[in-house]
Length: 255
Image (cartoon, rainbow, N blue to C red; front, side, top):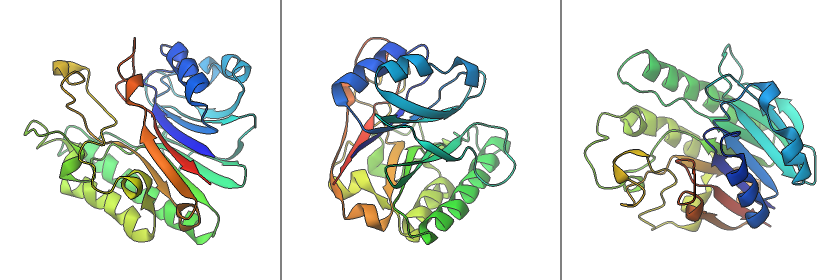
């Protein structure tokens, strides 16, 4: 199984990009974030014509998450984390015996402030649910835009992000808490020493041509799936295409 996560940054504006990548990369499962579309605006017919079944949770203007499965229909198990939340940031489905959790975590800026507090509270809810998923003993994937740079080497050399919510100790501790639970960062498992595993390049200040990137998009695997991990990568060329998202797809190959 080839499983990918891709912050598409408006699915309808970048549908042609998405379809072209699906045709070339042929992922079996895809987690999408930032749909920026209502439920009724989700391009189900175009995706079905490309061979993908889908479940999704939309929201006007912001957020939105979806899970695609090639030649299959994902079985929806949850469309939000436990607890009250109106924002479309989490969706969960079963595909071929694997629980797929797709997430778009809050950015948290500016910090300090209510948005940062919401980010940390959201990650606490994620951690609680992630622990319950591990307790099931099922093979589980947590994939998406975590909006956290886990380590200093996961961001280009700069001081401009020092006050950013993405790199704060509390944010990194939230990511670390998941690792301590027993989740494995698949990209780091495959590339333990790589210094430039970037998945996001801001549109501003010429950051893509300068390769001034950050690693925000992650695929975490439960123990049963770590044993099946055969490869991983970042499809950077997608970020360099026409009308691109500011993120690139991240993928893993499972046995």
